[in-house]
Length: 622
Image 1 (cartoon, one colour):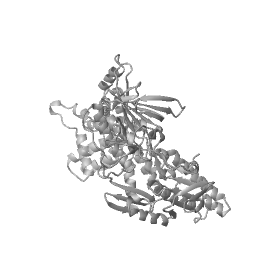
Image 2: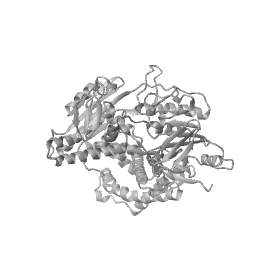
Image 3: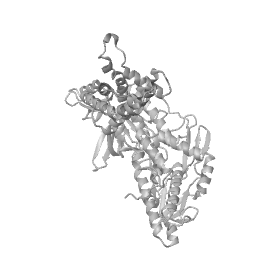
Image 4: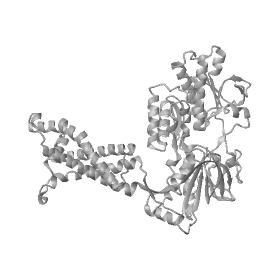
């Protein structure tokens, strides 16, 4: 069809796997040039290969040629992996085209002959042959015919690699994109069915699934349903998000102090949208009666409307300032990538100003940093800010006395991190030991002209207040005509649906979900949002397909963790308590594993590794 666009949409695993398979098969095919000249009735493996296997086996301390065969296959596999990585990173050729695959293979065969075979013969095989035959090394000479056969063998290996990789690419790695719908199909038959069903003369209707929100909940539902509905041409999927990236929010405090680079914890949502249409826009109205939503494009403010048959609400929440306009106006928040960048720039600016200030009182005021909120976000943020400020002062800001900076945590509860019991006491002592001043059973009452007014009548001059003191549902969620909790979140039934609107599902921070066993609400954490996404996806699939099987959301929390400083943390996992370095290490490993792609895990891992040996960068990025 004229509208069909064939593209290659490789993942790293596919790229490497296809070429590695081709390389292993090519390792067997490369013996053909040495077999074919012989009589086919008595064809034997060339003595050159047999000798190579013997040499390879001896290097590993064995006399069995079969060991050498495994070495040969292992080398072919390693070369295939390296070649696959090179092709993936350079995008030099689209090898789904057979001729490109063959050219790439032949080129690779020639390069391997020169870059690997020649050095191996002179520095590895030749000395080993001399040792076996008790000859001087210089007496072992390879004839011109040997090199011709070696080059021919590697060309056969390369051509086989290219053909196999090309065939696998066309069968498993090629997608078919409908540009009008901006979605991708893995099979040409499905693409053709889509063209006929959606864009054909009958223009049949589709079941429209619309997901609002690009966080853990929204992307979690998207990934599951588009995998199951990939070949269902009568279903369309759309996702609307104000940001065009999925943000790994637990790492925001580290990003705010420069431990992690911003893009390393942000993954473009379009990376996930193979079978779905993505809209970067702000949702301004949800009409559950007309089954439509209004959205406003961020770039130019243009508004548009989308209709749905099934709606998934995963819009998260916004910061709750409890009606205090002064705090809302003057305090920083820690919910988005922009928030973290602003905090980092501001903290560095305060240190730069304090370093130039000669008035001790004003210097102390500039170098005072307050975090409000005794939950996970507030505690992790104050731990990061404290480490960053004190490390930077000791290494870079020589005009600030190390005892001048003051880092404060204000918590309204009797203790910090109440979700993890006695570990909250350890966290408090550890933070205080590292220099953090902690106020419990205290609230920030007001913030006026860079003076924080606490409800215990104490006034603290400071230019930096970070608010992590609570969340409330977004106004577009609070306006939906259904049952709401007092914070505006949506009360859902056991199947995660809205009352009177069974086609509307809600999960994550914008929903109020109770445990049917205890009637207590589940905490609005990423852990629960991920699990809720699984339940919503399964229930949604049953609804779309008209099958029975709606299931309730029941989940036992696996635990909670908090990083409270450099190489320090607390963790309550499966009823067991961890603290100090062990908890810090568990925190690192867990959140590294939850990053959505291998690339992001590698980048963040490198950031953490560098942080172990070097101070954090204090460059202010305007």
